[in-house]
Length: 535
Image (cartoon, rainbow, N blue to C red; front, side, top):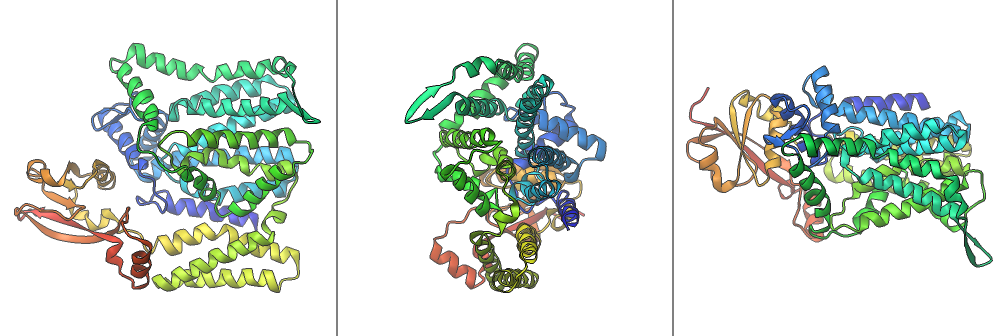
């Protein structure tokens, strides 16, 4: 059954990678794809470009790999997202090797890898061209190298791990070094500090014993220093790029409008779905009653690490739930380190009842939204879980029932809730644009980037509502994403509705509109206009 579920996982990714509108989109992907395609068009291979200028927002590694994939497979969403999927496969291989080395159980190892693959983190970020998927790989690769170095005493593990992790700088900058530093600080904290009979003692001799670990951390800076030096000394605009990246893009996070710290805590809960409850229970039990086990040093290190990185991301004003994604894979190592089976975790009553509640919610949504297929799968899930709670006597039968219903939560959500409600495919509703010029009227230039990514052969221009006559006068078509005045020279040829990204509704009006099926309150009309009598 495990291998069938792995096959299902591949089918899910295979059906989603090439779809322009991903079920769980992330806005930055639009910019990343645009930067890759524009860089290929302009021949800006060394310094990826965006809007005709070197891209200052992120280092170039993801764009380099995207350009390589597009050059080899052809320019397409599938080609570009294969980069993130490849890192996803690499992460699962690392996780498999780590868990197998720790647990010595092939069945438990396969199960851990499978569950991680069906987590919200994997199904979202290993199918999007984002930095988060590769960041999961690079951080896990360092811990993988660190762990095998400690087990085998072979310095090559840590040397290679440090050098490879240093490449991770080229994804999001120095934050990867901060994470690695926190892993080491957490390890030294656990090793150095001893509390006995109410007294705190420090084992300072451990610092000398771990001198090679400290030296290896220096190796992570080799690649970043080479790249920074290249920009600074060899590229005319390099100093400006570095200044923008380090000051405006990174330090600027402390000066943007402050966001609630709950968003970071929410990230831990969201990106572990549908295994949030058992993982939270596991971490709580580890904190409340630690056990003296073989891997306790690593368990304690990871718990301290989780606390440190959470505090780190609570500091800036800008806080996004997905900031915690590089650390989720470590949670899936904890059961193996604690010698706790996933069967024990998933068969806990709290977990079984929580899954039942989720299927009841899906059932309610299927009734309200009149989604027949979702209704069928939701009612089946409810019946299976209720049977496992009340009628199934065999532990093996109960285990299979809970396992299958739990891992299918997000696939059911994707294919039977989100897909039927997805926006129309712009490539179909605006296919008559072809290779003509089109002016995109919107409040955000990223909307025009998204249109250019989808209508790959069209010549796209962006216009704010007040600049239509100035910017759209030479365009053959116009796509308006907001309700605004359109010059008389254009006439409407098509329109469709898309879901609003931001809703200004209170709870009462939201619930009322939902049950009355007033879709217009959740959607906005998009219109396609054509100039004159152009054929």
